[in-house]
Length: 215
Image (cartoon, rainbow, N blue to C red):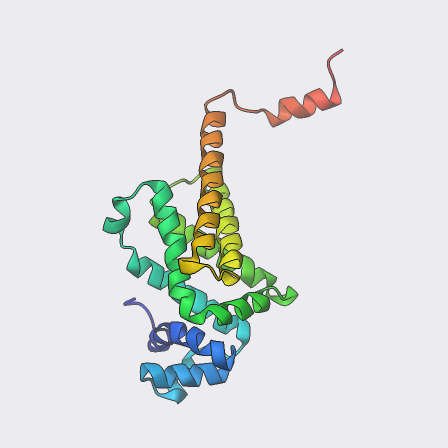
């Protein structure tokens, strides 16, 4: 990005490589040093640019996965797909990007699962789901904006867990799992569209009936 500072550009250049090296070095400074050597960046600059705490390192890595996903799936490529195929491609591409760091991703999830990192876990999950929907062409601004991101976030999180334990050829089991979850999302979206076409549910009328039930 043109408006990024030099340190932000260094962080972006390092992040995926840090994840790859965290497989062996853990989410520690050693992974940053190894990534700097791998990418060809001065170690002192790398240490200055990259977060020092584990949660910050994981956050930087997830942001890099978001950027790489967007790079690999430009608008013209996604436009040729049906909405269901766009969502599947976006989730699957994330798995492909993270595959060299698979075991580090497992430990990253453990870091995000710590109570003190709960806000960060929610923020990163929402951010990735929001980006996937926006790349898929979603422009909803009403309550659909939120329900779509919540449902996709749940699909992605559950698929990620399935993928981490998948030893099948070509991640066939994960692919089948993802297809079932996306089917559920599409069914939910269809149900919402049908519901919106009917008489709107009145909260005040419902509460009134609870208070004054018909005789």
